[in-house]
Every structure is written in C-alpha cells, then in structure tokens.
Length: 432
Ligand code: BJ8
Image (cartoon, rainbow, N blue to C red; front, side):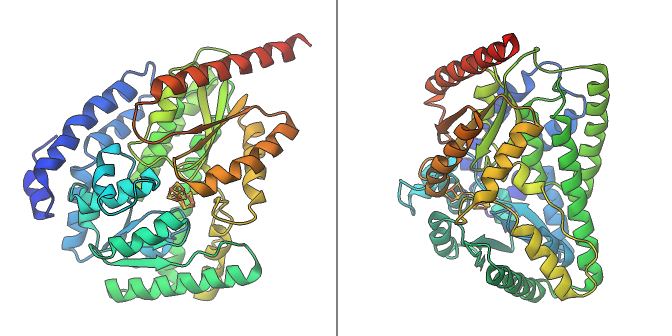
C-alpha cells in the first residue's frame, strides 16, 4: 500500500495503533481469499478495493470533502442512501466487523454487548478507522437496544442523527417512517446546504436501484447448479457495496456478472459436484467478518445465499421510480424500506417467508442460522424460524459466534457433521 500516513495523521488517527491493524489484515485476507482456486478474474477489482480499503477510497472521500461534499456514516440498511446521495453527500457503511476494535468498545460499553456494536464504537474511540474519522455526521437508528444506547455514547465523539425506526409494520408505522425520512432530509439539507428536489431524488432512487439490480444479478448467478463463484467472494462484494463509489461498483460488479454468466454457460464451478448448498440467515457480517463463510466453505459446504443485511435484505425490492412529488417519493422510500424483514420487528413473518423462498430458489440443501453473541432479537427469532423450517422438512443448524477465531475448530466439527447429514439426506432422496 502506498504511504498514507500523512493522510491518516490529518484525520487525527492513532497511526501507531492503526499500523497493528494494517499488519493483520493482508495476511488474514490472503489466507481466506487469495488461497481460493479458480476464482473469477473479475474478483481482481475487489482484491484491489480491499488492498486500498484504508488508502485510495479514503483519499477519494477526502477529495469529496475538499469540494464541500459531506461524508455520512451509516450502520443499518434502513437508512435511505437515496436521500444522502440526493444532497450531494457520500454514504459509507460503518459497522465494525473486526475483533481488533472490541477492546476499545468495551471501555465504554458492557462486555456482554453484541460484537458489532462494540467494534463499531471501538473503531471510533480508538481513532483507528479512517472512515469514521472522515464522517461529518453519522446516522443511527432505533433497532436493537444495544445500538440505541450506543448512539448516546458515540454522540460524545461525533454528531449523530438518530432515525426512529418503528418496530411494527402497520399503516401508522409507515406514516411515521415517512416522517422520519422527512426529518432526515431536513437534517442533511442543513448540513450540506443543498436542497432535496424531485429531480435529484429521482436520480438517486434510480442509481441506488441500479446498485440493487446488479447485486440481485450476482445473487441470481448463485442459483446455478454449478456455482460460478464462492459464497465468500459474494459476501465480500456485498460488504464492499456499502462503501465503494456506487457508479464504479455497479460497473465492476456488472462486468463480473458477465463473466459469471459465461462460466454458467460453460459449466465452470468453484466447487466439486454435490457440495451441500447452504443458505445462511441471520445477523449481518460487517467487513472483515468472513469467519463463518470461510469455515463453511473449508468444511465441505458452499454458501449459495445470505438472508442477511450484508445479503438479500440490502438489495431485495426496488424503490418505485414514478413519484411525481417529494411526498410520493418519500412514500415510495418508506414502502420499500419497511419491506425489510429485520428481527427487530414484531411480528416478523416476512423473514420466515423469505428464508423458505430463498431456500427453494437457490436450491439449498440446508440452512445455517447465524447470530452474533448477545443479539437477542435474532437469537429469540430462531425458535419461530426453526418451527417453520421443521414443518417444511428443511434442515437447520444454529451457530452463535463472535469475531474471535477461538471457536473455529469446534464450529468446523459441528458444521462437518451437519453437511454429512445433508449429504445422506440427498442420497436417500435420490434412491427413493
Ligand atoms: S436491519 S440486522 S443492519 S438492525 S446484530 S447490532 S440487531 S444486537 S445489525 Fe442490523 Fe439494521 Fe436489523 Fe440489519 Fe443489534 Fe443484533 Fe448486533 Fe444488529
């Protein structure tokens, strides 16, 4: 990586501490990603993005700031990127996915807090994340209790705007979310000095829909019998979608999808035939959390789809593009966003329907239900999901695991046994 130390210093980062992170990441990435065989050529772009994750992309963000364009950090897929984009600001996803940041988070949060929250807060207060340091405003939301209370602490370090997400999906909740979108627009207009208009919002809605469409195309390629791309690579692309320049991301992912279509036509796969196909569902996997996918794919499974916020919840359903007034556009945004089935909603039957639908569409053989430790909403929702999957005869295993690799061996053993069972089921079905 080029020498970005001066840039990091200008962001008031703890450069020495940050060096420690820079030392770990390339080896970690190399072991997990570069060791894969027969990867699509198009992954070279994403390798490059990772290699420059704290370099070139930050330089680009700082160039935006020089032009007085603001950088807005987000933590949840409910925050409408369309609005951020319409005010000429740049949106970046900030969820922390590394164990490296947890100790700093634990200085101000209870230890029994979800690692995603601890790492996100830790990334800011340790001054080791250039994305946080580049942000002019961060946007929280009222989803789980851990996040909700963390915003109050983060607000001591950086301005935070909190969007009050309803926890039910009635008509009045939809109206409330439209109201929240309106308040968000006002806050961003004040910050940026730019007005949201029907024209610039329509343009942004189209752009973000395009990003959703290309991600959907990538996921559709994973429905093929012969998988042209690993689950690990698909996960990486989803994670990069949260902070890359959207136009470039759409272009590069589109090119990769062309290559994948070609591979499908020729029957090129990255897995051996009959590898059990796994649908992962649950809590998000923020970059660089590649742990579960890596364990699954080095234990005899192949991940074909993620029903997570770093997966289908991020791109499914488009925002209607035909709004003629700001009110209509805000309604269209609220309608699309309130269609996301996060476990923070009660009741949440849509998520179960999605899991069953994806299981069939992606021709999965089993489901891995993933939850980060101390995530009560997803852990509690497991019972409802399992009951529904049992009724459908869909095998499921629950894996609760954090960022540390300490339990990797144990998880591998459990997953290998699960995959063996899936293979036996498959053979039994064939011989019937
Ligand atoms: S829409 S999943 S991004 S809230 S894993 S911090 S819920 S304790 S991340 Fe999430 Fe939005 Fe829902 Fe998606 Fe809390 Fe659970 Fe941690 Fe979570």
